[in-house]
Figure 1 (tube, protein in one colour):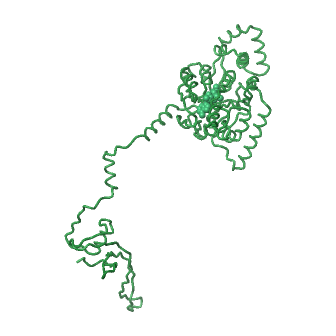
Figure 2 (cartoon, rainbow, N blue to C red):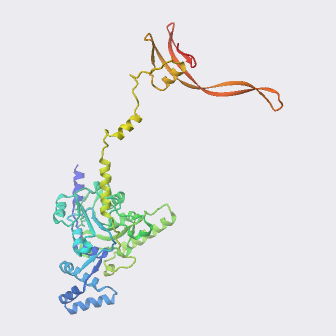
Figure 3 (cartoon, rainbow, N blue to C red):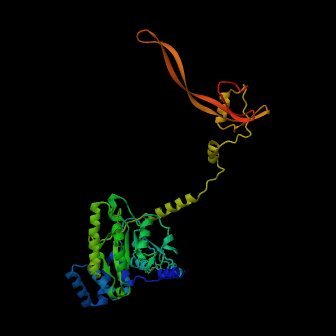
Length: 446
Ligand SMILES: C[S@@+](CC[C@H](N)C(=O)[O-])C[C@H]1O[C@@H](n2cnc3c(N)ncnc32)[C@H](O)[C@@H]1O
């Protein structure tokens, strides 16, 4: 009992992702935009000298000016200026991009996502979903009114979302372990199991699978790496430690990865080798303690994150329609059911009277018994009661006839004929001994 209390307390510990790191993540997933008017205002605010210094850094290092200025404000933790001057847009197509934080704390991660993407175009295409187990934190999310869906559930029983419905999952799970398995691995396994990350299975849209951003401890990252590499394409160039002050506290790394269409098949020699190479490359990168670098904001084909666009409303509708269908009970009084019942019902013959104009032959009696209409006990004119069993059995009889052969000689041909012989076994009392008397068909019961 005490053990389980300690475990649940440690799970509810709150290590929220630092605001500075969330802003970084948003700008790596999305694209920083900075319009001309705001550029002029920023030039004023920073002073010409500082502004030119930043522009020079950008030109010398082949970086975008907007990214360098954004990072300058971020390092100063001047979030007000960031909110005021920059907008972040996600790379996604027509439909909705869904973002889920399954261990949402007070929902700050999601809150900053909405704030950073304030442009109307982005906002109406982003659907935010939060789940948090601890009630006070959950209530805080609800009160902020910033997410489109919120749940107060243990992730272990989280079954609210359609399969394949998530474009981006923010992963900062509780630390510690569950039954000896580190939570980072345990919950990642569950996420993969319930299949909520989008997987297109469409050859033309390989780029468009669901993504995950993990903010996890270095030891957890190394521990879960086999599972991560098996199921995800890791953006190796985007792995970094959180800023020094935060790293000294929680030893966290940030990892970006895209769900593979199929997990790597380790029984296939080619893929097993590829897997080993990848494991080695990523382990080396992690062990080199990579720091964040402004270059990570720049997009190229290895670092550009395209979030899948999801027909979320339809998916959700289909899910609830399927649930309702499961809950529906058939009306057993409707005519369809009556019709099926009539066809399949085993009839009760106890009160049935068989009316036959001519006396029953034995074979007919046997057939009626074999059909199950008479249940083994018969009376003859209400005088004698007999236990009878009837049925048919396969018999062979020989029939002989004469034929002429090729030479005109008369020969006898024997034909074997297979036929069904009705029979009736009657239990009789033969001078105090019970005997079974078989009466075969063809005779009348008289
Ligand atoms: C490390 S915090 C992450 C908070 C948030 N994602 C962030 O980055 O700011 C983990 C959160 O998971 C919650 N939690 C713990 N066990 C949980 C469970 N089984 N299901 C859902 N949430 C859980 C904790 O209450 C805590 O708020």
